[in-house]
Amino acid sequence: MTPVDFTPDAVLFDMDGLMIESERALLQCWREASHGLGLHHLDDALWLSFVGLSDRVCVELLRERLDETQLQALLQDVHDRYDRHVEAGLPLKAGVLELLAELGQRGIPRAVVTSTRRERAMQKLERCGLLPHFDTVVSGSDVVHAKPAPDIYLLAAERLHVSPSRCVVLEDSVPGVRAALAAGMTPIQVPDLVIPDEAARVLGHRIVDSLAHAHELIAAAL
Figure (cartoon, helix red, strand yellow):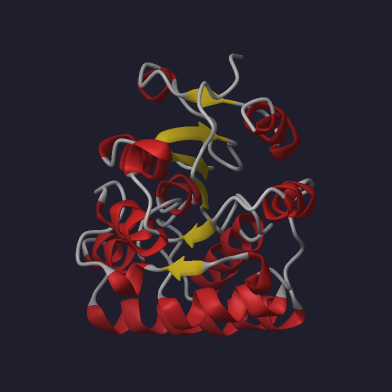
C-alpha cells in the first residue's frame, strides 16, 4: 500500500467505528430492541446498512418498514439501551491515541467529522477522553446533506482554514469514503463491521486493516 504522497495540512477523523468501538454495541442494541418488540423482520443486514449514515437517513429507512408507533417505540428503546453504553464510556480503537499524539506533536490540525448529531457526538467524545485532541468537531447537525455528500468534510476544511486537497481523511465506512472523495480529499479506510465489497474497492482509495497501518502511511508523509 503506497503511503500518502503529500504532507497533509490536516487529518480528519470519522468517529464511530473508526476511533470509538461503538458499532458493535449499537448493533446489539438494535438487535435486542427489535426482537423485544417482535420486529423480527428487521435483521442484521438492515442494521449494518446504517453504518456511516446520518440519524435522519436511518430513521427514514426504518419508516419505510414500520408504522409510526412501532418506529417511535424502537427508537426510544435503542436510545435507552445505547445511552447506557455511552454513559459507561465506550472503548477506543487500538492505535488512535498514538496517532493523535504524533499529529499533535507535529502541529497537524485535526477534526472529528461524524454523521452523528452534535449532542450525542460531544457526549461520546467527552466520555472517551478524545475531545481535547481535536481543533473542531463537525457533526451531522451542522449540515443539510449528510455523508456520502461532501458537505460535512468541506465544512471541516473551512473551519480549519485548509484546502480540501491537502486533507487526509480516516474513515471506516463506504459512505464516508465517498464523501471524502467528493470533497477532493484523500481517504484512508479502516473497515470495522462492514468489509468493502468490489464496488467500494473500485473507488481506488487506500484500504488498511488497522489504525496502526494508517498511522504508518501518514507518518511516512510527515
